[in-house]
Length: 622
Image 1 (cartoon, rainbow, N blue to C red):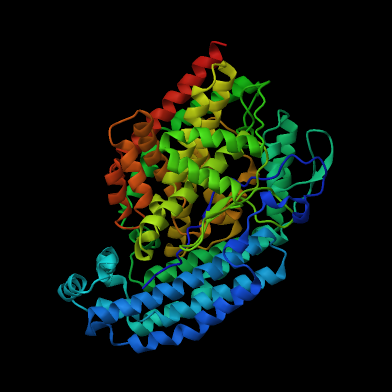
Image 2 (spheres, rainbow, N blue to C red):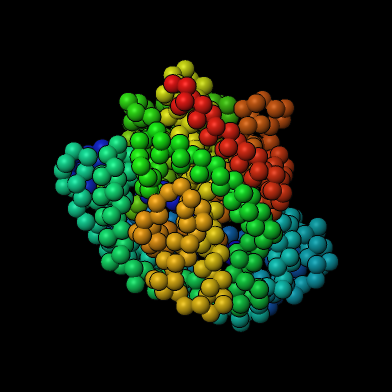
């Protein structure tokens, strides 16, 4: 009955990393203390235990055959089939997540890669085995299904599932067609797997001279650190080195992205959607107007970007500003380094408005090896939270000792708590929250952290640092994701219209969009046109816009909680516990924000405008 994994994989777009090691070599995993590495034994104590579960699932897939062409007989038959599905699906989730977490610990490890490949192949077999379920259920009348639900104890857990299933009746194919589509599961995952291998395992960054004058191997973590350098030449060298690396793989990279876009178009046409975006948003029952409202409303405030960039250029004393100049702290002589252990203490205090239970769960996450903290040789880049219904969440970090990474840690803990609360309060059938709301809890936590830090300093420079942090976070989570969303929509339309996807055509799209957004104030260096080749989220169809909608929603929700509005905290905690028990827009409405209207986006943009003005006033009155 499940149409996707029960796993929430949230990989943020900021590719960050390491503790501030002076040596040119990236640390080896063996050199990191165990307390800073996740404990995967909480899922499986050994590979032998993993193998036992693998064999269990493989040997039980044929049990679905007894339900084939029999689901319409009774509610009890449907319930038994669902329970079998849940039992095996939970186990497959554990197999898949465990093997991929091991792989991400060291992407060079062929044994872990082998486990991940086997888990993916098993999931494809599972998809084939259950492909008959939804087509058969679609043949049962709505009246009969409602009768089954009312008369069969336990089936009421699936009321929302049935509602969603019937809603998508026209896009569900015949049993044979669904089985055929399911057989392509490994093929559908191939573009991202190739992209990951190309950009994580095979991509070699050149040597670059850092701020101390040492020649070091560039990494994603070191790139983000070099962009914080006060020296314009350091930032420029880092940018040129990254561009050089991606330029060497651009043709293969373009072919991989093209295959992913064409895969999405094929699936949308197979399921009788008018476009890929209709298919992607339809899964969450989100109208396309929500996407359009977001892009249009945010772009209507592009003047705020120009104002901020001009302010940044003036304060930094630059004749011209490049996009790689936007991360360097705008305030001098302020130490923004935060060790991981310091960050843990700060976060526990920042989350106190959510109550003792929430803070207690945060403390457990920070002290029980749920997090893989530092960058090591071969480790997957970025940051994410991932888990299963029967395991606690796991978080991947590449912590580098900056305030930015403390906010990233707050972000991932938000994901983890959302999953934890949903799992504990929802049955398996409705624990999997929709991706449309997946970034709300994470960005809510960032709002709490900012509020705590702003309220615990009277130092004007510290306040400026925090304003700069929040503004840059807003730029990355809203403006940048909307820009990515504009690229994504254009690229998918190109494929639909039959326009060739090449390095040149992709570069032109990126360049034209960057000029539209930043051209009035910033230098758009040629190398930025290759940005399409480094964004892993483009392999998660129409996902990036959800960062922007989520931050707009969470900003409103956090304000109501921090302002002490009556019932606001209770509504937010209920949101965390709701999982996927209703459509995501309806869940947010119950929490107090209506994303079907452009109003929350407009409110968030007005807040951004006011913060830029506040920063300007502080800088001019120093």
